[in-house]
Image 1 (cartoon, helix red, strand yellow):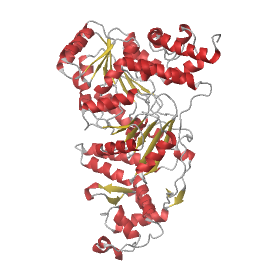
Image 2: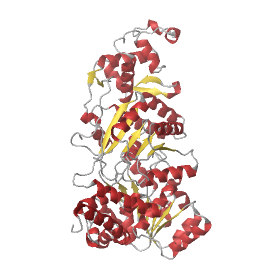
Image 3: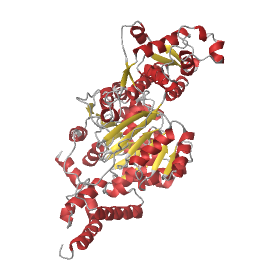
Image 4: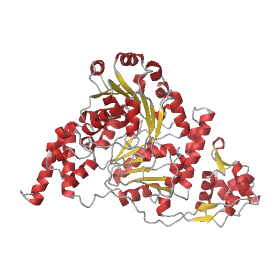
Length: 604
């Protein structure tokens, strides 16, 4: 580990490991296997990069997104690490050059897509090379329950078969107990040590609200706290991503769409702009974001409800990788649940898979409807109890107003039962509120005892009652009957009067929302900060890499606070390794020196 510590300092510019990085790294250096669950921004990459440098041979990284390999390789080369990739973007000559570098021992890290790795030619190549380790990134993709399923990941057990003596590490930011078990089974990692770091991201402020006027809600959210920030807006459909991106452009935001249906060069251009420019908003389907290493994403917004808590956690985790305050904002409605259940019903998965996805969708809806701390519920889902409310989510900062909904819930359940469990929410509300429209009269529902018993609540309030009953498992949505509601066994005690239920009260007034804003520490000179950022931007443009590949914001803040005047002092800034000191030290020290001259005069 002394060698690993030297690599951490000299290559990456950090003085100490986070827990449990050192233990994971030691396991791999000693030849053991590891399964690592660590939140986005927790430092997963170091867990295989440092062992790859410390061990003999080249580290092979299986990465699911070709579009991101270039940036990952660029970041490594900035540090002086000999890195490259093999994927379909290379022509035959370029690919052969990479293969020759691998065989001659001139590579420290090689990134490969799973589709290429499973080809016989690639396996033959690797068997001729000196391999330090295999790293399987985004390992949840091996699970049939995983939310970013990739078929070729299911074949990665071949690594153990073909290379039984080479250590393997599987890494993911999100996996519940079932997914972890499947990762272990499919990758043949039964002897691997498991490292499960804390899931909590305390810098993220969680906020979930009902859909009212979605575009106005999004606009208010952005204008209140994120007018000039980089962020991601997730939508359920490709069409919606393009519509929202165009609409945001009309509102003065620098927004770009991203989905699998766009031409590949358009997707690549939009992703590159997001990584390398400031204040870009990407409006995307879930196809965007896996492996994104942009540290200063200040918000993630969901215009539709994700289908699982795992998806929600993974997507919101793309905000605030730098540890600075960030927002996870979402709006949802019952129609989201219906659409997601329609998608599940039409999928080609097994019945067991569909049931598992149904349970996960119910858990996601439950997180939306909860009246207590969001973070408590989120962490409990992943088996990490939270000792007390977090104080940094909407339900903590703006406690939910509840009401005794027992009588209303019984009326709603009775309406479902007496109409034969064959109708959706709109018709049930019509019956409860005493409507005598064509459909009510057609089915003779105006003669039912529950007809007209619900006039005390308006349509919006009744929709809230039904949605919460679905979210808490008293009702289910029957997709074979186009969204008809059905009673669940859980509703019996409530109908018999043996149980009461408190419901969330829907408010009609729009309250001011406190938004998280990123502010510089008070001891930082804004003029120096902007000058350092401009220096970083120019260097990044010259080399065609994202600015954070040069230095993260936290390194620039340290420069502003410590004000290093010579290479020795500059080398002590976190994130400045030996390579970056030689490559960039002079440029940034000149900026700091000019600041001193301007602020304090020549004698400063």
